[in-house]
Length: 322
Image (cartoon, rainbow, N blue to C red; front, side, top):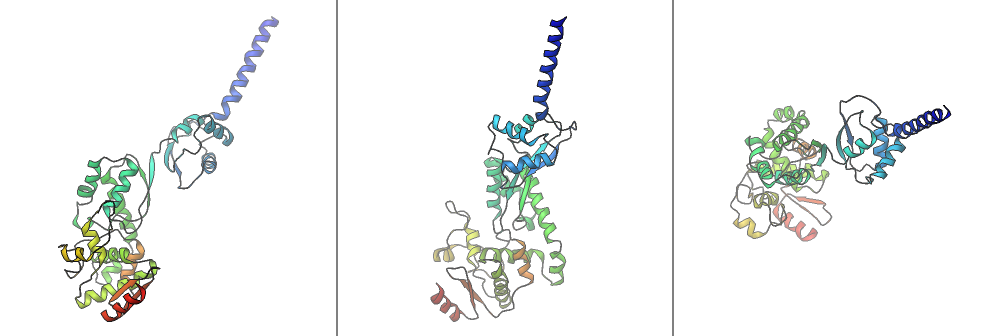
């Protein structure tokens, strides 16, 4: 009898011990519906654990930290989006955080679509065929959307999203950001496609936000006078990728020998398409250009802009600042 009591007591004790050990690592809920857990860029493990606890996806912070140590996952969690359900235990959550369901992609202003494609290919491990489709199919279905509409922003993109879906996502973001500008351009009697071409030139030529209205004013002046725009960035666009550079140095030979509508030293007017994907500051500068008599500009070694009304004045600026 006493032996049986002792066995029962032992089993109860072991059961309590097992439960006490298991409970901190158990799931915090029974809901099987996944939640989107987002880890911003530059977030450390401590912040991630605190966020998991706050969103009730783990039971105890200390227990989850122990799991990370046991599985040697510290420092291996990447920023991104993860589909985690409350019925996952701490070990399952830790394993889940080793492979993102959504990844961050940052598109900075001034990139051409091929550069965006390369970033997407690197992030999502695209094949050469998929990257080629981004350049020649997904971004060429509408002539007005060949370039310039892949809006510079930071995107959180599902890893199973296709290149075509990503292109549509970026175009939708462009339309959202441009919603207030479409009627403004219409009121100013400027086609939005024209505005986007000019904005792309401004984006590539400007040394910073403060330069943009100045460059916009010079471009408008040249267009109104029927002058050649003579913008190097257009020739860079025509050259494409040279070795590992998309925006390579423009030489006098390039100006003479490249026979392209993007060579604004030979052909008047705006390029056939935008030459890059501009940010909102460059787009705004098209509407709010500086009223100036300048027809020429350059940047000194500190990226400060200097403009002049005459070619002679421009030559003086070259001597003085370059």
